[in-house]
Length: 162
Image 1 (cartoon, one colour):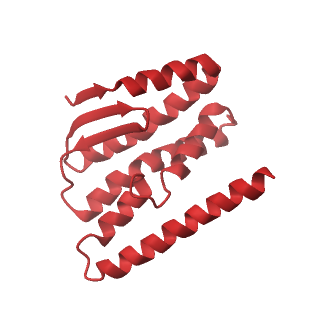
Image 2 (spheres, rainbow, N blue to C red):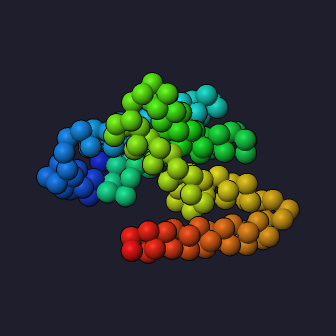
């Protein structure tokens, strides 16, 4: 059984959410988060690993698990959370459900695929680069990708809001 650590910042974040948002919105958000983390946990178990610790804070949920047995297993574990969200979105949309859970599942799945190291997509890219013969080149490519994505998001926010 993993050790679960709930930080005060997580409780404060929740209190603020419940004060300013409607309960259906919050429920959709948390179910999407649980589906995401369940995807990771299932992948860890399927690859022979074990979850040791789960930390809840205002920045999100962080799991500590045994090291993956291979690069392929590690990438599978990293991408299983977003995959669970995107699969949930697809199932909900095909069944005619376009509510908060569908929208949060899509948003969480896509957001976690962004190429930043602290998100699942970036962590998978870092795993691919680590120890590779062409690691310095891959790191430069990933940095360029991260800068490009950041610029695209900034441009979308600036020009999309105008």
